[in-house]
Structures are given as structure tokens and as C-alpha cells.
Length: 169
Image (cartoon, one colour):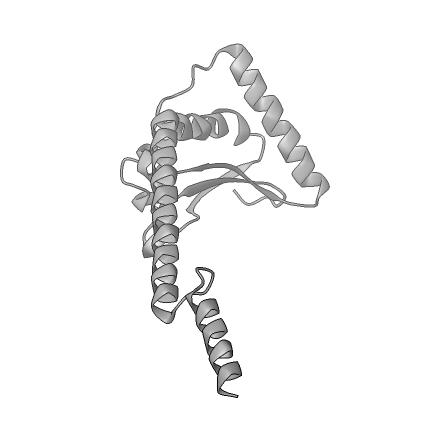
């Protein structure tokens, strides 16, 4: 009997000593390494997202060169989106989203419904506002600007919404 138990103990010891088996300390180290890898991946992802956000801010802060062709393309694209929204029965459409950093006050006037909020716009959002003001307002469209994202409880992205349907202006 002693011989068979010793063989079993040796067999168990060999299995426990096998590299496929992890001790509790090995398992804790493995878990720590996995968590660190996930954290690094998350930080890398956040870095890439912030870089993309900064590039978008830079791009949107620069006004488009509004040639007649570019203007016609913008209007045609907008008309298609408005028709699609109307077919769904919608009376509102978000037509632009942009980081609050493009506003000279980082969106404070928009958040506070200050009547002078359009004066804080720069770049492409300013051009979008001017398109509404010069062409769409007289056609009965209303433009509503609001903060649509609150990262960490602070104002984030701004959304421009075209509204139609009722007669309030």
C-alpha cells in the first residue's frame, strides 16, 4: 500500500510541478499582468481617441472653402437627410456635432441659452449657423444648439438640431 500511495504522490507532484499548472501566486501574477495589459490598452485607446479629437478640432476650426460646388453638395446632402427624417415622421434632425473647444467660450453660452451664443462659434460650426441664418431660417427651420455630452460632468460636444413642423420661431 505504501508503494501505490508513493507512486500516486509522485504522480500528483509531477502534475503539480508541470508548467501547465499555476500556483496561487502564479495566478495572482497572471491576473495582475492581464489587468496591467488591459490598462495599457485602455490608455493607448484613450491616447488615440484624444489625438483624433484634437485633429477633428483643428479640422473643424478651419472654415471650408465654400465654392458653389461645395455649397451645392452640402445643401443636397442636407436635403436628403431632411427628407429621410421627415419620412420617418421626425420633426428634428441633428445636423452637426462638434467639440465645445471650437466655441470661444467652450460652449458656456450655448449651455446657458445666451441669445448671443452664435457669436462664440468659429470655423465650420459658424459656417453651418450662417447657412441656417441666411437660407434655412426664412424657410421655416429653427436651429437649436445644445450640449449633448457631459464627460466628467463638464460640457462636452455640441449638437446643432434643425427643427420643423410647428410654427413657433
